[in-house]
Amino acid sequence: MSGVNEIRSTFLDFFAKNGHAVVPSSGLVPKNDPTLMFTNAGMVQFKNVFTGIEKRPYDKATTAQKCVRAGGKHNDLDNVGYTARHHTFFEMLGNFSFGDYFKERAIELAWTLITKEFGLSPEKLLVTVYADDDHAADLWKKIAGFSDRRIIRIGTSDNFWQMGDTGPCGPCSEIFIDQGSALKGGPPGSPDEDGDRFLEFWNLVFMQYEQVEPGNRTPLPRPSIDTGMGLERMAAILQGVTSNYDTDLFKALIEAVAHAVSRAPEPATMASYRVIADHLRASSFLVADGVLPGNEGRGYVLRRIMRRAMRHAEILGAREPTMYRLVPTLVREMGQAYPELMRAEALIAETLKLEETRFRRTLERGLSILDAESRDLQAGQNLSGDTAFTLYDTYGFPLDLTQDALKARGIGVDTEAFQAAMQRQKQAAREAWKGSGEAATEAVWFGLRERVGATEFLGYETETAEGVVTALLTEGAEVSELKAGQSGLAVLNQTPFYAESGGQVGDTGTIAGAGVSVRVTDTEK
Ligand code: SER
Image 1 (cartoon, rainbow, N blue to C red):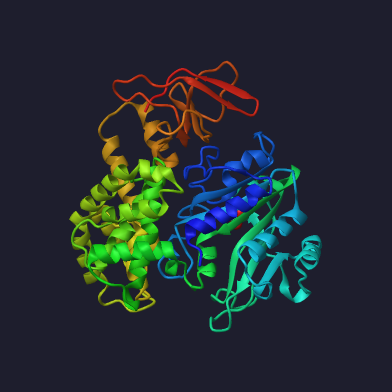
Image 2: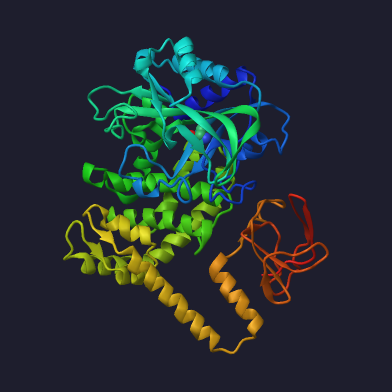
């Protein structure tokens, strides 16, 4: 039986032996992509290598990449804890070819690794290909000796991979294992494909296009390969268990939770242990990568993940901050592979403790309000949007925490009324502020702040980054463009420029884009 750490190194060693550079995981905050919330796949750090903008000293690479899917296009948060497979944080093992090999070699390498190194029995395996990809289907016949029956053609987005709304993309071929008829579920493409019996564990993407903007797809300079294997899934397969949460690494984390709350898991409480174990990983890795809990953007996603776990700790009977006590176990299990976790251990523990201490002040009271307001509701009914908003605004309950708390009873939340309550509050704040008689030019900033949100600061981690210009201003008014030679103000969604805010000097530097170069003479908050 192989542990998670051995499986990871077997994968990387196999591709290193086959001429691939072993490249470290990139951070969870994508520096080269302003449109992504978090790194959500192994290919993210290579996005510009695929499109030809960036050159690296190798044309074949392999990685074990930290990924978070809890916001943006790929968001698994709501499912975590209730299924055997979903995670907010997971590791993706991948091999990449940047214009070197393409479909045939990719399939050959994959087949050799899973049948020879990992020893999976070929009879249990089957694959999908994109509906009209005859070439991939023929290669699977030739290399794996599959009959048509085991090559399933799928014509939907399930077999076409896209990182986000823009970026490199292409048709893919997914590899599945049949875990036997004791589990429910049908093969991919069948009505009951969501069952656990047929498990997808590796996605081979034949990168051929770049989605430049919606509706505009151009071919990549050279056809390339991007693959992604879920490490947690492969560990479950090789360890003969049907849930990722029963693998060695998760067992160790769940044991630590049980120890911390002095209570052993039972079927009825298992989801809570899973949520805590999963969210501990996401929270710790995000903090190690420079994200801190906050009220907007990435910081708010982190806060939501942390608080969701903290509520589950409360369910298990914890009356004191608990999450921070689990950090040493996580570092013991994963610190070798990800040294940043060891370096940030104290910061992670401190951040979790502070957040949990803060949240505990309102958690109990919030839960009792939730309980009182939902007591008479039946499955299929909704909690009122106003109550959900009070829980959010006064008791620090993110909306999805409230939804999660009601999920088991089949009760929803009136999210429209929740949003309306939020809008009313913003409107009231705006009116109160208008009355204060500030200068008219500053009114622009109030509107902008509401429309485009805060700028995220990346400068503790990096001195260069990509960002999106969310607004341009000159002479106190918003404009749609600035001409060559003109000066003005640019607002960005994220930036490494340090802003002056009462004291220190704002950063200076350069902003460059396609055909544009801008001198930055000052940065202000
Ligand atoms: N990018 C593909 C995925 O995330 C394969 O790595 O599934």
